[in-house]
Each structure stands twice: as C-alpha cells, then as structure tokens.
Amino acid sequence: MDRWAGRTALVTGASAGIGAAVAEQLVRRGMTVVGCARNTQKIQDLAAECQWSGCTGLLVPYQCDLSNEEEILAMFSAIKAQHGGVDVCVNNAGLAHPDSLLNGKTSSWRNMLQVNVIALSICTREAYQSMKERNVNDGHIININSMSGHRVVPTTDVHFYSATKHAVTALTEGLRQELREANTQIRATCISPGLVETEFHSRMYQNTEKGASVFGSIKYLEAEDVASAVTYVLSAPPHVQIGDIQMRPVDQKS
Ligand SMILES: NC(=O)c1ccc[n+]([C@@H]2O[C@H](COP(=O)([O-])OP(=O)(O)OC[C@H]3O[C@@H](n4cnc5c(N)ncnc54)[C@H](OP(=O)(O)O)[C@@H]3O)[C@@H](O)[C@H]2O)c1
Image (cartoon, rainbow, N blue to C red; front, side, top):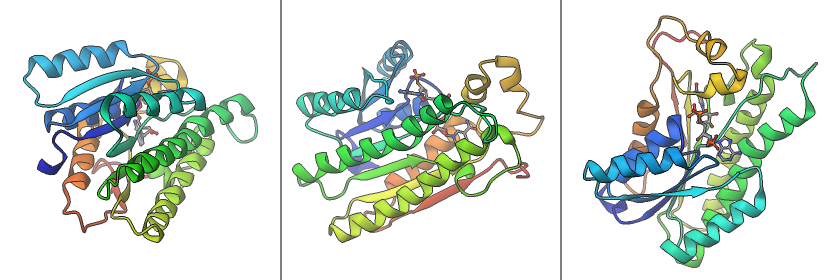
C-alpha cells in the first residue's frame, strides 16, 4: 500500500457501514480520502477519530446526494480544486428498497437505479477523466458489488436490487475492457460480499427490528472484512488486475 500514501481516494457512502470502514482503512494507510454522503456529521466524527488516533492520512467529509448529477459534478470540481483529482474511486454507496417486480413503486426502482447504477457510472467516468487529465496511469476504480450481482435469490424484496447489482458486474467488466482499449494501466475491480452486518437492511425496511431479523445466529461479514478486501486489491502489484472478489460468511447458504 506504500505507493498510495499521500494520494487521493473518493469513497462514496462513507457515513456508515462498509464505506466508513473503507475510508478509515485508507486514511490509516496515509491516503487523503474524500468521504461523501448526505449525512456528513458521521464522517466528521470519523475524521476526528482518525486524527486523534494518529492516522497519517486525512479524511475530508463532503456532502453529496448521489441521486443528483449536478451535486456529483460539483464534488469532482471541488476535489480537483482542493486535492488535484482522484487517484482511487471506491463506488460504495448503495441501497435497496423492498419493492417487488409485481407490486413495487416506480420511484423506489428509480432511486435504486440512480444510486446503485447511474451515480456509480458518473463517478467512474469523472474519476477516469480526472486520472487522464493528470496522466495518472495507475489509478484504480473499485465497485462495491454484491453476491446479488451474481445470482438471484428467491426473496421478492431484493429482485430489483439484484438487477442493479448484476448491472454492476457488467459495468465493471465493461470498464476493464474500455481501460484496456484506452491503453492505460488503470485497474477496475468489483468486490461482491454476501451478508454484511451494517445499517443496510434496517434502512431497506425503514425498521431496525425487521432489518435485524434478516440475520440469524451465524457469524456474518463485518464492514472491516470488506474494507480489507479493498486494501488487498489496491496493494496488489501494479500488473495484477483483480476482476472480482466474491466473499460470503462461511456459514451463509445462498
Ligand atoms: N450490508 C450488506 O449485507 C451488503 C451486502 C452486499 C453488498 N452490499 C453493498 O455494500 C455497499 C454499502 O452498503 P452498506 O451495507 O455499508 O450500507 P449502509 O450501512 O446502509 O450504508 C450505505 C451508505 O450509502 C450512502 N448513500 C445511500 N444513498 C445515498 C445517496 N443518495 N447519496 C449519497 N450517499 C448515499 C449512505 O449515506 P447517507 O445516508 O448519509 O447519504 C451510507 O453511507 C452498497 O453498495 C451495498 O449494496 C451490502
């Protein structure tokens, strides 16, 4: 990871769960991390914690609603002005609404597409353009996908979400191919976790108890496990292109 110290990463959805853990691990390894989300108070608290504990890097909170393209573009302009540009982009922000294909609300489907697919694609394009204009040839774009991007579980609540994550699988491989056509050494990776203990399911059901009921008695993945996969792919030698890491709790059946 030494070569990343002092360089700039954007981590979307850094106010909770996996994004917060990724931001923290990258700051501990000396990176300047712009952490974005709608709620920046939690990112500010994490930034203060990182500072107290003597991290060599810096966490910079940035408020951005990723369902709004103008806000995303303004964020990239601010990163350019304040930090030069983005060397690593971790497209982590994502959400699910429990809206089935037969009865779901169009607004819920649209919101999942906006954040999980369109915002991820805008951030990817803008991060690549930022790398290109500064002749950064070793950047990395990492998409937090899901095992739901690789198979469809028979749970009505997540069928549309699963479609957005299948899109992330296609987008990551398409990106890898376009980067090769562009003759760069920039890498594209997705990380596909099974169940991780975060706020994700409570937010999905807008109900903490129902969110918790998704989890049984097995040992689930922790946000830090996924963050370690991010630092692993970043620390691979520059000629190694890891396409996807699929990771489940050992006891997860589906
Ligand atoms: N938890 C799991 O079991 C699991 C499994 C596989 C994959 N994943 C994937 O992992 C990623 C992170 O999930 P998580 O479990 O860490 O979820 P989480 O705890 O619910 O955190 C989601 C993050 O996304 C941000 N976000 C959501 N909508 C946003 C918007 N419109 N604009 C900006 N930020 C937004 C949230 O910030 P604000 O609300 O402050 O904006 C929050 O920081 C997602 O892509 C998810 O699909 C999760």
